[in-house]
Amino acid sequence: MEVTVEVTQGLERRMTVSIPDNDVESQVEKRLRSIAKTARMEGFRPGKVPFKLIAKQYRGQVTDEVMGDLVQSTFGEALSKESLQPAGGPTLESRDLKDDNVFEYAVTFEVYPEIEIQNVDKIKVERPAVEIADEDIDKMIDTLRQQQVTWNEVDRASQKDDRVIVGFDGKIDDESFDGGATEGMPVVLGAGTMLSDFEDNLLGMKAGDEKTFDVAFPDDYHGAAVAGKTAQFTAKVDSVSEPVLPELDDEFVKAFGVDEGGIEKLRSDIRENMQRELDNAVRTKVKNQIMDGLLEQNEFDVPNAMVDEEIERLRQSTKEDMKRNGHNQELDLPGSMFEEQARRRIKLGLMVAELVKTNDIKPDKDKIDEEIKAVAATYEQSEAVEQAYRAKPELMQGIEAVVIENQVVDMLLDQVDLNDVEKGFYDVVQSRV
Image 1: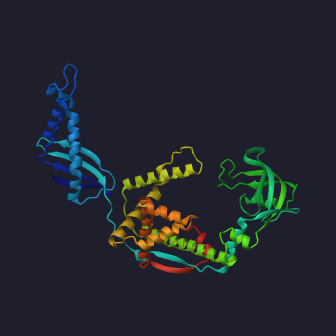
Image 2: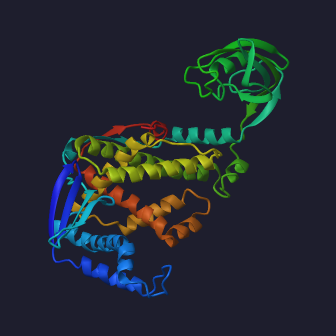
Image 3: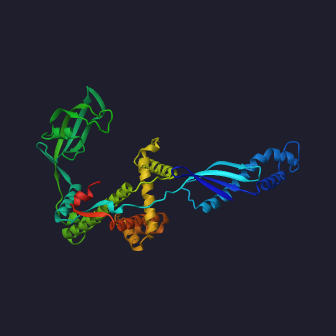
């Protein structure tokens, strides 16, 4: 077997394989005679069709089959001989049985890029340094109280944080529009569920008051029919209620599963949950900065076949998410929507794999246990969730992948330009960056 390889473009390779002294002809002959034993043809009894007629009718098909089998049986050996690892399936360009009894075929495929991670020390990382303060816990408790707020109807003008029940009718150029009119809608003033122009005009109104005012819809408003336009609303307030927050007593803390220890035990539980949320947020921010830095400092081509596969995965995942959210209409999502994200994922995956290989990183069993417990802790039935993860290999593979990636990040932390920056708890956990 003779193998030659040429670079066509980028990561694409064209491999030509020549096999002298092959047995294509003998295999074709053998298969044709096997067909002749049972072949049916008009005018002849089964198995009695002249061989010349069998050969004339089936030789082309059988030759293709034999050649295909020979390609499959020798392709792996040819790759091994040239130390090539295809990224994606090959494309058969040609195959031919030459006059000198040499069988030759040519295939094209992409290979994995050669990656050498560089300039890790040039990656700048800011790691948030956070101490959870008592004031942070107070704020969290206030949030929990807000979630259990009740409403007391009052006979006064509305003010910030009040809830008004309002009916309204909106028009643009004296024409009604979808969603512009309703009755009995609750609006908490200052909550931002409505446009600020709308909420601000409800301030100072009493039950029974009616008011007409303009509301300017922003250019990027989600409703395309009204975006960038100004509507005139007539609103009537049916009632005004003030918020009543629950007292910080035993009844309140029991609602959060605290049967003993009172408010101090609740504060301790809240601090523990906040610390877990903070740790995850800090880890995510550090990881994102390191991954962004790896991309900035290392340029290389990625196989288009891998990108195409990742685009399709992202497309299908998006469609499934849309169906779960009630969007049952089948949408044509172009691949261009996902190409940038797909290329990023593939590049990072290849770099992480290279770092794992060159540094001989194995998943740490203790860290796997910690990760499973951390995931399970976010569910009420944490023990059942933990058992479910350990029982399903596909879930365990996902956990191991996360742990490996975290171990890579931990290793790189010793090499990057790392600076700790003091931050507040809410600045870290509520920031998307």
